Length: 312
Image (cartoon, rainbow, N blue to C red; front, top):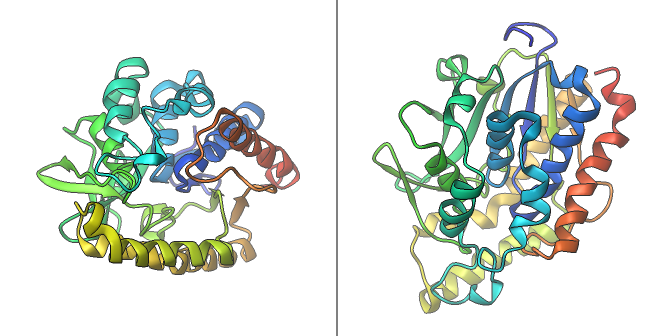
């Protein structure tokens, strides 16, 4: 493992994605299976939304992590995803059920392994009261960083509560999770992935696994979803602040800002972007076929990047 100021150290940045997060899981598994020389240089994982689980399970379980089983089998459970409830009071994505009854019981995380891992983690959550992104981290380096985000330590927190908060998706779940006396929700609508210079720091290389580059169709979809929910949510439910819902409409702008950073860093030779070369399954499709396809496309994308990875 490299030391943090080694010029070859890599920050692995993992994007959001709802059920498309299996693409990131497949990419991670392929990366450490087929490119150990790259993986040995990674000393920081950053993650948002669905990829928080990808990061935490690797740090907890290493190469024996249940990522493939989770993303291709476990998440097909209709008790977890039932889109017929999208316009009803019950959650369409029952994150509480998933964390408490599936992940915590069948695939428990080891807080000790995560906190003591040589690879550190920085994850994004959204403070519901302030509507501001905050970062929770296991890294003393990140804790001391000059960042535009408030940075908190994992210390003293239930690791499963952190996971629960990070995946508490707007509209489809609409519940808050308490951490250190404050309430949090999924930050994916506001920060699809964490590439902030204050957090990534002095690392000379950045590897980004991103499930989308935000097409025009997706931009329209996000804006329309925010508008329709703003108009119709009082007929169904509104458990979160209005600003949280409205953030959906501007997600495409935040993606554009992030992609400008990615483009700049690529031109400097510091960054390698891994994205799917085929269309992923829909973000809300948990059919076995869609989940398996997403996972396999993640593995395929890493294999396709082999020539670039070999010189990274």
